[in-house]
Length: 247
Image (cartoon, rainbow, N blue to C red):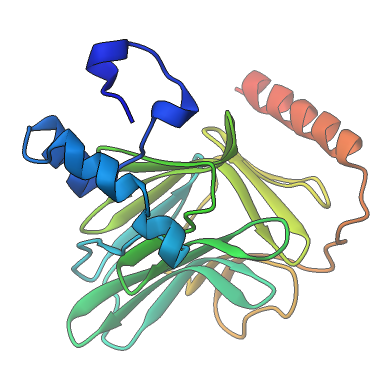
């Protein structure tokens, strides 16, 4: 590992990715290069398989989740209540719960093999160290599956908001694409643009079973795995064209 300030080049063998804490300490001169080189011989992430947990500070009784330009919110959550902005096959991919006056966020992102690569458990965030790159910039976390291929880009805005700006949400063969101006279920070309719900226990439910509670949008009977991906992309472009040309 060689300091970038000395080389001004990016070569994989010379790069060590540091967590937010240690990156700050290294930048501020509090973490000597020799310590980084020694720790790099046996990185914690490779030994543990995941990063150390990071605590998110969510609080209050009102929350807002943005999936692209669609927004799902709940105001005045009562004690013991849970709000799920996104559910796939009955599983709450994103969940806010209020217990003993505290607000907790839980979130799980999977890869194509249904393996968790990012988990937030009651405000504690852990991501898979086997991913190519996990990058924190301010409050935003970007996880890339391979060089330049973004699995997920999201921003945590405590005390009450989370924004998924770009990426793929995968579970049980369902693929949801998210970008700044759409939310798109690839399997059946179901397109959302600029929709919103307020005080629905579930914002969007994709797949089966359908949650037995108030649901803003429910899409069931979704085909898995064997679908025409090329046609789905064509449908997405057509939907975006219609949206751009709408008054």
